Length: 414
Image 1: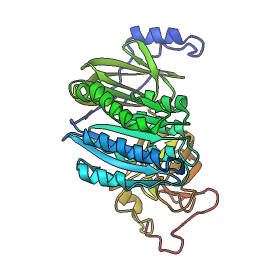
Image 2: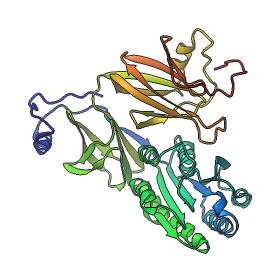
Image 3: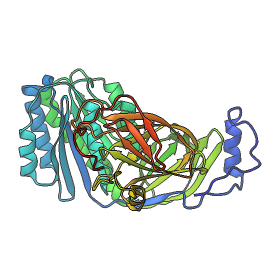
């Protein structure tokens, strides 16, 4: 990827943004090569149901929720894979994805109520389970109250799900903040349903099913989709000369054709000639400058979500851990294609925040937040969330706060 501003653009962007837009549309500034990627989207649906099992769902509400979920399961087709997550104080992955109706019925019928409402953590866990799935990815959550227990924030969920191209559908029961949750669904091209009576939940589950299948399932096979992200985020997106939204940005059911993308940064407009292709997702991941660092990020525990300067980046690798006790651990990490790699991070002080998987139950402080100067072309950073420290490939250690290590009595095999 290459980017430079047309030398003719020397005016103050903040004072005359419309002029810059005009220059961008008519000038012959250098185009970005290889500025996008196409991801084939097979005709399969990965769906995760997230169900509120807090204390207020006890009795009839939970019974009606189970009935609704079972009706939802009854509609699944051969190309659907469905998983089940529950949440109260903590998040539980009740059933891995399957299309076996009997297995799903058993899993949902075994749900029990009690505890607080970790709604955002439940949605985050669902999103994490879908990150590496190919095909359409859908979250359907049910809640009867406002979040009061999660470590994840709603703004983080919006950035994660939009950036990963995940549909989010919600069902609200009783005292919920519909306006706040509606933002999440709208930004991901989903919807949110609401009822005061739990007896209506079955109908709402079926309504969500029909809305998704009628609106997106078929179009996704004969049309394409687009995801645009940026660092920093919140930047204006221009498609074919028309302002369409801000990053992270997602559009679905697009006609197959060439498109011209522009991202409006403070220093100018980043541009890309891309294509929309049937059955594919066009992904455009931009940076304000291509003069930045290449980062390799590992974490303990694995599978942690990574935010840099409050922008969602991705998830650290899960698998055989890299052992820092070995002198060549950096070389092993660099050769491991599973590890999280981030390119073109602008130089300067960057705030990193990593969060462990919400249902990784080793205490309440499963996150680390630290400011690290990004100054080298290539950096390897190992985030030990338990011990609240970060070790760089050059041996520099950044300590943060008080350690919270459930493995303190074990050997450090990581």
